[in-house]
Amino acid sequence: MSESSDKCLLLFQSIHKVMQAERIIVSLGIVYQIVPVPKEFSSECGMCIEIDCSDIEVIVPEFQFNNIFYNKVKVDV
Amino acid sequence: MMGNFYFDNSATSYPKPPEVAEYINEYLKGGGTYGRSAYDRVVAVSRVVENTRLLLANLIGTKHSDHIFFTSNSTHALNLAIKGLSYPKKRILISPLEHNAVTRPVLYLQQSFGVEYDILPHQSDGFIDLDATGKLDLKLYDLCIVNHVSNVNGVIQPLAELKALLRSVPLLVDASQSAGYIPIEADSWNIDMLALTGHKGLMGPTGTGCLFARNPELISPLIHGGTGSRSDSFLMPDFSPDRFEAGTPNVLGIYGLFGALSAKVLPHFDTHTFKDLLEQIEQLKSFKLKRSASFNRQAFLFSVISDNYTPSELSNQLFKRFGIETRSGLHCAPLAHKSLGTFPKGTVRISLSKYHNPNDLNYLYTALKELDYERK
Image (cartoon, rainbow over all chains, first blue to last red; front, side, top):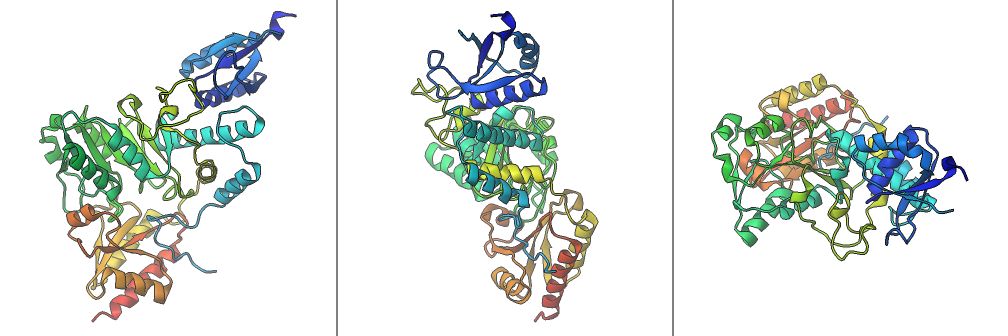
């Protein structure tokens, strides 16, 4: 599988941050989906954002500018 | 077409923009809760809740939308701030026009923890005397609380100038009567905390409101419980807004508030028409206006007292004979009425909506004029 099709999960501390991140990702025109946080990463029953790992470098500066902190996890396929 | 004779918008606004009912109906049909899962229904609700938070941040002029916590109203928000802070100096400053939403929690602090309060120096209409305030030893105080717009006479207080004097003393603003009517610039005015309600000037549903806190780490939560975050911990999260939002939020109300904030209703009358109304009423010999001494710091509400009628009689006459709805009495603000010399009888309060038009204001004046002619 090529690097560009690898999927990454972006985990945030709150729903507020998930939604803030979603607005930024939408504004950048990046394909994403909101998915449940896998239980191996968190005890949460909340949501996180799945994107192509190759899009991370586009997102990072925007997240930094908006003080959005996140954890990135590569999804095993 | 029937006019709009509802002049009790400081109690709660009426009518509401149609978008309020539309969004509430959308939620009732669609359902779902805020966070805690990731299926589409929850994601859709979470978007609306967070977009509402963002609209509130824009409304009060702050970039820090995560420092806005949903509450059930201003009273809840004020209690969160007042009871959540610490008071090492055991002294608070409050304005002379505070509502019981402030004075009762402050008296609770006094009775429970010995925290004393002083009233800010002021002019006869309750407007804060900035020169005299500047001469106070402000280092003695832990907190200053100010009602941005009086719910009795509509005086607008000078928040930016006051905060410049207070410097490091935190300023808590009660924006119950100002939000939605006049501009608020929380960041540029350096406001530390601000409480507002959704159902008055914002024209949303009851049961909605928020607290803004520039430094949330200084406040302890009022309510503890589940937040859908850090669920492995028995302690409340240390980040905002979750730290202050235990329990499922009032999603139904927040949908309605989102509708109200999205509606962007502009006033159907201009300030000249409002000024004309005040000047006309002032010409009526049996009535006295309780308003700001300066029109430049007058919001769209004021009070009247009559030589001929008690406030309750006047309010009843206006309703029975003219269909005009007002509120009489003390308006849950005995301190304000004491400051204005209208305690204990109170006044009749007239509070406008953005939906009032010049004909509605003229109808109000005509009714008062007729009652004035009949004076004893």
